Image (cartoon, rainbow, N blue to C red; front, side, top):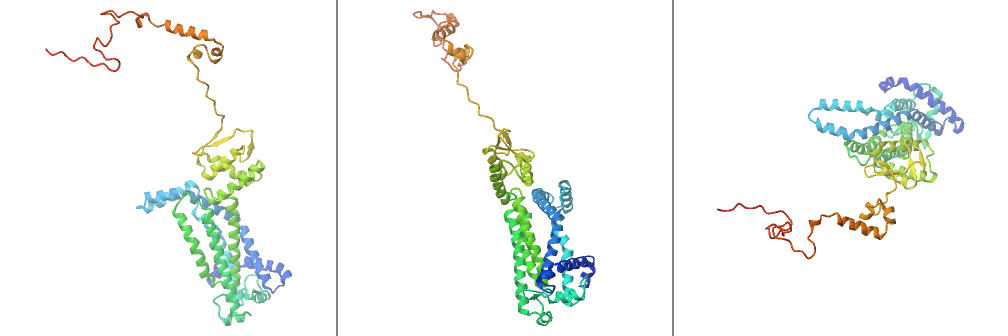
Length: 427
């Protein structure tokens, strides 16, 4: 514990100061020695820390999605250089650099929160041992030792003996029951948070080892919380349970309003967005414009849910613009082809009626309609007169011998088809 105190001494004093400030506010409402005053002080500390970590949380979301996008490329690199680990690492770093992705970004909220966690643990351990720490003086220390949450002191642990629990003014049964319930809630909230991430906010079209790792973490993390939780003081359990609930609610909000492309959450979001846009005929929020702008910019790279969204807007007479807005009728309707390309929908061309030979020679359908049947007969007679006179023998005349009118059958030639070559005469 001395090692932890020396490592986190730079943060222990600020954490204790924040707790004391919140305690002075809640102490006027619930009483300075009550568990509500000290417990809500810890909860408020968690909320304050998590609000400050929101920018890191946003960065974590972007990094996680970027890693999911790079999984197919990473898998190709691993297969290509599976016998050369150094080259594999170099190609991985090159891929991260080109895409602007940092694998450690997904761990930033946990890493940034760790110093506060250990500092709070050290503060609560000082309360359990009766040691002043930070800005917590003797009077505040005595008040904190009297504070109980549902009968369990803030500094009590599940593994504490009966003598230590009695010194804090509580019974061992109360401490065991309260800590067990809090450990179960803490593990369950961690499991649900990871589960909703895996079942709702993961691109189901891409099967990568990253998904298997996330699935394994869904079961490993709750077990780790349960094992380590029996050694946490009640105050630390309050801290960790609060931060898990905050993470769960924050993630639910992100999944609902900014889901991962290709996930079930995106399908549900685009379905809600379609109903909203078609009802109002326009986008009303900046987040909606951002989503639609990204979908339009994808072009033929749109997934199935995004293509359905564009087609639904088209059927409603709406057009998604490149700036994320939606307009009616002013712009031509768009059609979504099977390969994801958005094209302008033009009216189907009606095939013209087939003209007769007389209509084509007379200059079009209008002239043909004005022509009489006599003109058609004249045209036919003119066509017949253009034929050579000797092409066909006159009626009643027999062809002369040796003349051009001799039949081809008499000359030994076939009627139609390829002619048989003459064979050399045998002498």
